[in-house]
Length: 277
Ligand code: HPA
View 1: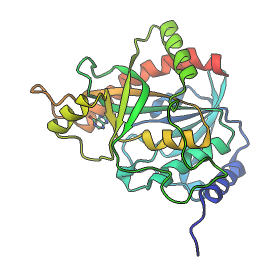
View 2: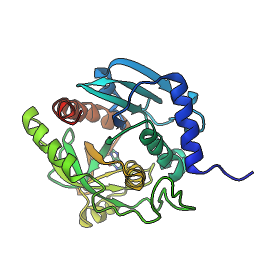
View 3: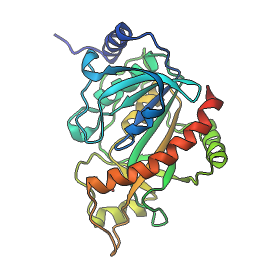
View 4: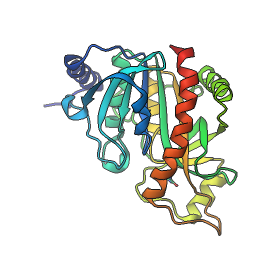
């Protein structure tokens, strides 16, 4: 039997979700490590566990619940992925992309992504929030490798505006209204799961990367492929400069600092979503 195409997988997953709920999804959210608490503000929620969705991967990463949450958030109809999929869990780049195609298939007009990341930029502190302006894909993977599904998007999608300029402008204004200082910069994606050596961190910083993490780039490539505008924030959970003062990073520190940054991201979204709804 031949492998199902991404279109077939997407349609099966959307049908399975629609068998559970007919709730609208205008804005899709992907919640990163330690940032799942952002869903607590979703009103009148309907939960669809990933294991109820045909062909969908399962969430195995710490701090990732593994369900879709539909509901109203600051006046917007949202569907949030509480738990995302990473290369380091063994999911393929195409599995990771599938989830994004499914969100688009549910009706999403825009995608808001969050992640936990190390600060390569020496000016960044743990607990900061960075608005992602661009990325560098150092994972060695691409979710569009293989036969292209023309029904989803073009063979060679352009990534110049992968992080939607209009949404970024709105996010900066919303952060100003909310009194949340936003860093801006370039997210550098690696496959993980080991953290970088100090030498790698110094190298990655020298390439112009500002924050480093193990997610997001596959999702953003998939979103560009299917024409879904993206806004993305990094929760800076640790300093990752690789300097002589480099600390040892633990998942406990990452989760604790993600909570601090996550509270700031929540305030930005509270100011932003009423304007995009
Ligand atoms: N490196 C890679 N991924 C991460 C880091 C880091 O320092 N912090 C949180 N996610």
